[in-house]
Amino acid sequence: MLMEPNEYTPQERALTDKAKELIEQHELDWGNGECFIQRYAGRSELYMTLEAPNHATVSVTVPAETDEKGLRRAMADGLLDFDPDEEFDECWSREFAARNGFTPSGFLSGLQEDKAYFGLRSEALLHPGQSNAGQGNETIAEIRWTEEDLRHWLKDHDWPDNNENMDAMRDMISARELRDRSIEEGWEIIDAMVDDGRLARKDEGEKAETSETYDPANPADPLSIADTSASAAATR
Image (cartoon, rainbow, N blue to C red; front, side, top):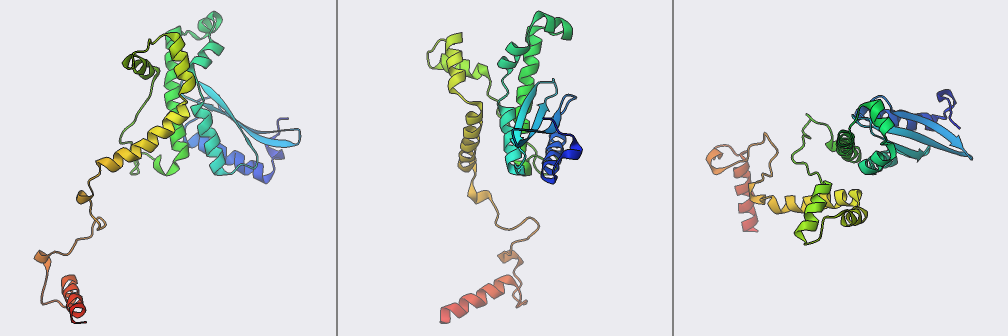
């Protein structure tokens, strides 16, 4: 049963407000987004419709007692589950095309763009501290896996890139697992590329003491203190 906002409990209201905040922050409402509480069989749940710029939508439902971390995870998982092919098969018809002025290729292209959009928003939901562009969190590199990549894999391994094999590849390769494993291996790649010898221990703005800046007349000079400490240690 759909509840009116004035019937929400404090917990339900807080969860709904947080969901609306995340939807606005991550631009997941392009005119058809929804967010409301519904109750049935003694249970209370938050229902959300998340939308991309080309108006593809996904539905996400979470228990009313969900915390922010669980809410973010559910929204991110829902976005990653979006399948352009399934959406196309569900929506496409001659009447649909005539009503909306779509060609099959144009409609599918829009769905694929929305899938990429959902993927970026999913990542931002899962890693909120890394999602604010312009605040030191600009994207350095971005990887996008497409069905064409699966076709290339089949060709490179001497398998026909026919519909049967492509269907099998889609079943075997989970978009969520591919994303997670790509991120994990990305950290290993960063480790391999970093040269520790080019990194500084001092914070930016701090100037390390060197022999060129050493002032022997200043007993408070760091090198003087270090020399004194070393001499004391040698006499012990």
